Image (cartoon, rainbow, N blue to C red; front, side, top):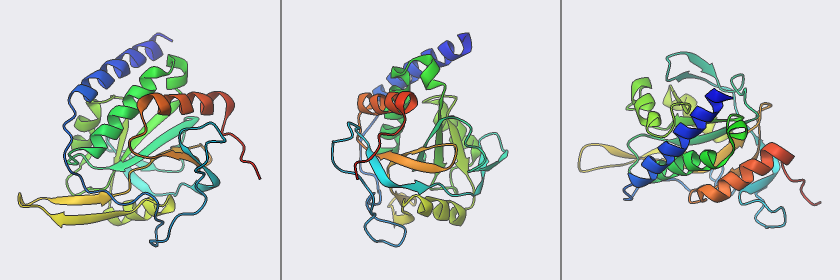
Length: 229
């Protein structure tokens, strides 16, 4: 319990520091409502009848299996490593100037709003869409700004792209920048993955920390709201 409380305290402090340090500029991001083949994704619930702030999926996505590398350097099977009741997954990259930082700050703040016992039931994975630049050390340094408990995953870009497609997140390299770098276009939902690999709900970028925290508390206490037929 003491360890959970200390982790919760660090998370709250990190949320404040991360939010204070955000500098919003343009960032390339793919549309979040298109599937792996470019078609509009079906199964998103857009009504508020379920009382959730996120989009509850009528037909939950199935999180794929892939071997990636964690910040520790260890190989991770993305299906077998789903140990917590909920694993939040976000595809992004450390050189993203705005959206990724904002989303990670919101997640950090949302988890800080939960009680320590609830927060300990949620894992957070940041899967890089820019593995050429995001090695394990770079990911670890980036995530430590938010929460040392967050995990970063890197690996072969083709493997990451295929994994993203299983949950309808587009990933591709964008335009070259005058500085010599490049944008990385990527979908920006926050995905909630259960231990069985099902993804019953997602949140769009811009979902506030308070709304995300409210949904997480419901999911951890009551589960996913049943959909009306």
